[in-house]
Image 1 (cartoon, rainbow, N blue to C red):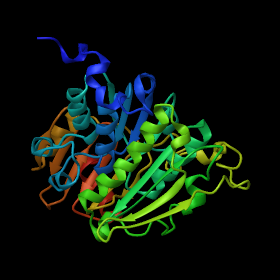
Image 2: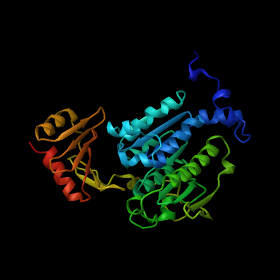
Image 3: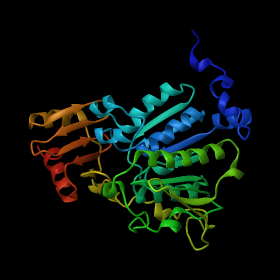
Image 4: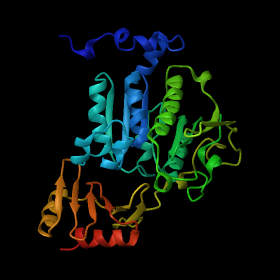
Length: 357
């Protein structure tokens, strides 16, 4: 029996190439394209599946989190086995995507996207797709896209409501000019406060994926050019034309980001370890950044001796503490502390269990 990877493009993508705006020429452009998807949760998992099924040549996935049972309600690439094994989302998604289309190059990075790595992650891509859940990361993605002249396909969902837009350097405003700073409330509710409806996620992801296929297949003139807001529950749609770049903005006005604005604020210029923390959206979890790599093998033994119940795979160590909290350790120096929304308490737990004895 023939390997499906050997099937001609006309078989695998026949229904797509019969769509006149794409055709075989557009399919070849898709096969030559590279996309970066940041965040492989609800939006990102759906986006990744669309890109791989459409035949985009290279799909890069980046996510800092792991699969949990609460994800399965809306994150369509994952199953119960992924949650039981505590697999990182990027790795679990890549495993599934390679089975969907073995002709696509799928790479997975289990990492926190920040100012120190975003430039290298985005290098050489044709599009950046937003699968994130927080304003700070979205703004960073917008910054690097406008610096490197890469279209940024924004999307966000909370409850039954969502927003979507394609931000194009040299043509539209950047995200900072549209929503303000990461401390503003411009994005409104979050999944942490109002929950999230899975069909609303799929609706926004479909809008994002459709715009991505337009751009990558050579149909840039068909890009919608609007900021779209939708309430799927009451089914209300609202569109507004995206403004041009702001001449006074260091991002969409000058076409690049000031070097100083890409400095990681959590980095310690002395070279010494620095501890930072971020409260994550959607659950009682704090991400603690220890500023140094973690030797998971040694910590696994240490935590076991201290009475912690452990789950271990090739990517991480999950430790259930006697006090009820959970520490999920990654080799890059990140720790997800579950069971608390208090950053100070999360840091204290990390110091107690990972930096003593």
